[in-house]
Structure formats: structure tokens, C-alpha cells
Image (tube, rainbow, N blue to C red):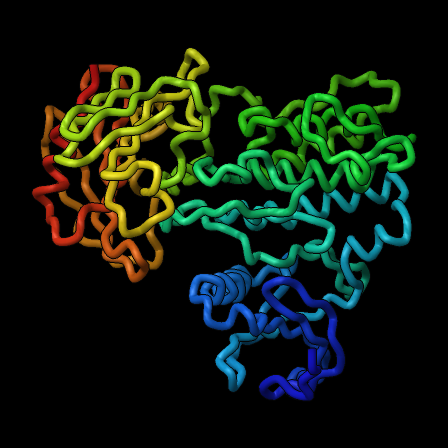
Length: 462
């Protein structure tokens, strides 16, 4: 590629790196009188609106969070050919990938570094963001007064837990991405980042000579060999963090960090009990607040559980949950992924649509997710449940209440700028002890509140 001499007001010095979607240049900022890194969208993706928007979303997200544990954004701009660029703080210490290329870090230093990485990821989790691509190349270092700062970078795949686009493609780096990230229909929440932290821990502490994670990327109950000097309790933390099922992991980066700190302080003779998650990794635990907001993609994550496929004009059923289908619609469902009842099984849920299999990926296909959760009813009210699911880029209509099918529903409608112009959220308490009913609906083009109410009237429990 031809190196530019200038990008906007910045004088380009050299190429720092190039990837599939962007190139990064080292440049001089005359206003700040210092060096910056400028990330430019690659030419071959210039006309892909989806990739362009993802590029800009990363810059906006970093700019909004503006935290000293994350790479900071100074400005955004556009080249004469229309490609966007973001001006970032320069991480002059390089990446963790660069450092590992020179050999393993001492075990104690590696544990301390993992603690710092977890602290940065915890910042994202506190703001309702899941990174989804924690790798050595995305962990950067920046010199500073007193001590070097560890930075979390490359939020191009990051996703707000309350996002509602429904377009969650397979994303992540093999060896570091959680198993559920390989399933476009699965919930991806903060526990996916916990898995990534665990895999980073195995990379930092693994014994490559004796079959450590740099040679063995398998995910399973058998932990790859760790180097001498790694406390057994730390190994137990990494085993929990890399559990194959999200419910077996720590709930978020803060809980992982707390467990890691306790483990690092445990005597080598194992006199103390191995650390346990701050909240037990019980498979019945619900997804953390907000993590189920992306419900366009939660079905199908556990094939073989309860659920039926119904012909047009009939009713769909999942456990005690029944939904009367609009003309020409079908039902498909295997349960509410990530939400477990007291019996340890998935709570009931369905996708209803003219084409349930395409609804999550094709914004032109109308449809709805319908779920029933007893656990949610113990935790919050229908109003509170809907409040956990904002649509930041959409204009909200006034919330209305309607009684349909014996249920008092709270209904919130959103006019959105994306490919799904209308998203409707509804929740109500099912009769008796059954729990909270939840519906997210993208109605057919041109339909109004009557269609919404008719669908809600067809939701039954029993």
C-alpha cells in the first residue's frame, strides 16, 4: 500500500499495523504536540455501510466511555475518498502479542497483568458493553508517569447488552472466543468476555513446552498445563472462567478479578479453599440484567429442549407457553437461552414469524420473541424488566397499557433509524405463579397497535 503523507491535519510517520478492516498509522498531532495513532477504514470496505457503521460505532463508544483503561479517541474525520478515520491515543508500549513473542512473562507478573486486563474489561461491563474479542493483540501498553498503563483496545466487535438490531454474526478470534460466539442464535453477554479473560490467562500462564494453550486451544474440563509457580487456586479460577457453558463461569469481569485476587493470595500448599465466584456459577442463574435485551437472537441455543414447530394458522407451544399464530406465521423454539428454571431446564420461549429461521438475520422479515420467566418475576416487575431494555438510537413512543388475554401488558414502541423501523417491547405478569411474560416484536410493515394487541391476546400460559 502507498503510505499517505498526511491524514487531515496530522503528519503521517509510519505504518503501525494493518488488518482486514483497517490500517493504523503513527502520526504527529501539531495541536497536541505529540504522536497519535490514526485508524483508517480499509479501501475494500469503504462502500460497505454495515462495516463503515461498525467502524464509527467503535470510535463513538470509546469517545463516550473516555476511560484511562481504554484507548482514548481524540477525534474522527473522513478522507477525501470518503473513508472514515479515528485519531487515537498512541500506545507506545506495543501489544501483549508483541511481548509474548519475546517469551513468557514470569508467573507472578503474568497474574498481575491479567488482573489489570480484567480491570479494564470491568469498565466495559459496568457500562453494559461486552467486548467479544479479547486477544493478546487487543491488549496494549502506554507509558505514563510512575507506571505503565494497560489498555483495552479494538472495540470493533463490542456490543451493547441493550442493543436491539438483532444482527449478531459469528464474531471473535478462535482460541479466545467463547463457544456461544460461534452460534449466531446464542446470547452473548459479559460471560463471553470472562471466557476470553480465562483464555488470556492460559496464554500468559500456560507451559507451551508441555502442551500449554499456545499449542492446545481445546475447550473442555481438562485445563492445559500451567507453568511451575502458578498457584493451584489460580488454575481453578481459569478453569471456572473457561467453562464451556456460560452459566458455569463468573458473571462478569469484576467477579473474575475478585476471584483471581483471592486465588493469587492463596498459599501454594492449598491451605485455603479454592476461590468460588462471587455469585455461584449455578446453571439456573439468569443472564445478568440487560443481557437478554438482544432477544432477536436467543432462540435455538440448546437444541433438543422443549419446543415445537407449528404450521401456519395454528398455535406454537413451548412448555406451558402457547402463542396463537397470525395467518401465515409459524413457531419455532427450544427455550429461552441463558435463562433456567428451578428444575435446571431452559425457561419456555418461542420465535413466531412467517420464517422463524430468518427473523434474527433478515430485518425484512417480521416476527416476535415470546418468553416466560419465573426467575425474572422474583427479581423484578414487568415495568422494571422493560426498563432494562433501552433502545438508545430509537425514538420512544409513550408507554401504554392494555389488557389482552387476561394479562395486563405494558407496551413500549420505538421508531428506529435502522433496517427495522419499528420495535415493540411488551411485558406483563402471567396469571398465578407462572412468571413474567415478555414479547419483543417487529411487526409487519404498515400494521399498527391492533396487530400488536392481537398477538398479545394470543399469548397464554397453562
